[in-house]
Length: 330
Picture 1 (spheres, rainbow, N blue to C red):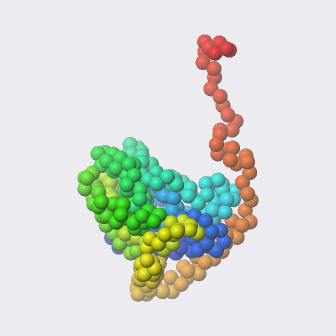
Picture 2: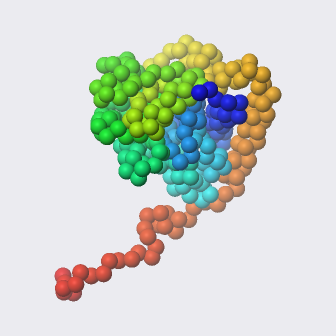
Picture 3: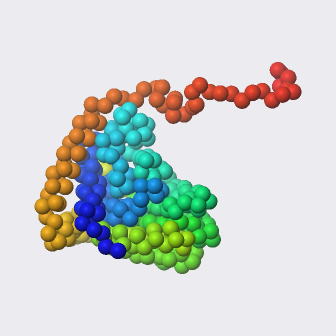
């Protein structure tokens, strides 16, 4: 099932919003683990979901809520640590979320989202809804124990979950070739009787099609799918992170930036379909949205101590009644 014209343009818009959001951070508030280069994998997967479908993200978290359709201004304010942020300025770069769009959390813990997404899928199955859960994780997380545990449980119970690996080739500086006995992570699904699919993570519509098929399988009771999107991060593991060793060549980086940039590739696809004017309008609109979001974040108030306390405790704290029969001394 191909994307119709409005959805093609929405897919491009979401990809561009991820790119421009992180470029705005570099310019105005440089922080975090950036997804520049991985936009097609994120947006292509999310466009196949409904708003009420669940998503868990990773420490590289800016792109996931944007890919799911979250408003930009509260996300920007959150990065700036402001009270108007999506988490009141208390979560920051690695903990963005938007429950109105089905996001149930992002985590700095590698592989931390895998059991959460599995649990969300179990919840949907138990409640009898047709919601699905999609878990984003990186190639490094595939070597965590939560990976095998989550896939095994999802397989046994045929849970409606899509395990989506953004394989950008490196866990910080360690390449997949040096850390995985089987470099094709999708093939690990064989051990759990789960379909494993490899897709070009720089091709937005290819990612969409692979995810759409997995979503249909999950909604119909067919169980989980493991998708591996071969993608690439243009920058370092984290912005401004000083890496004292050379672990990838300039030629490799330049190849992806010049030949495999997902935003550039999809822009060319849409232009060839006669949608060039629509693309230009989206680009202007996204630039406006980012400028307004930065201004909103700068002008927003800082959180107060009470905001932190309200997020930690029930206020007022209702203590349970003393167990009948206990003495005052007890």
